[in-house]
Length: 107
Image: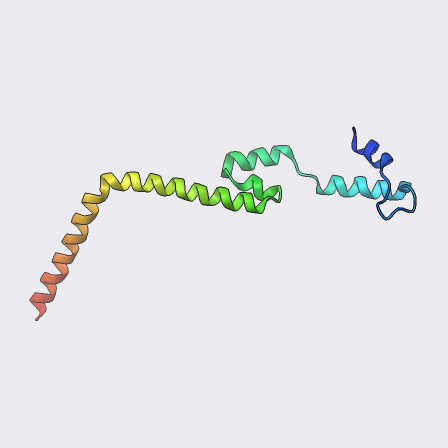
């Protein structure tokens, strides 16, 4: 069913009759101005992975997906850290040794 046909069949819930022509035009105009573009939604999905939810007004779902993305990235970082952790500890220990040595030399 088209939007125009749906509007023609509609009656107000507070109910004093059918919609006037002006009301139908106002509904169509507001719909045209506020409707979401499928292309933009797909673009946001491809570029941000979560932006489409915010664009569509699904804030809770967008926040949840954002948090899940952070967790997934967190798991990736943990996996990477498995391989670089030894070097991180070595650099930290070297810096500590250098700080202690400089502190001892100054006293």
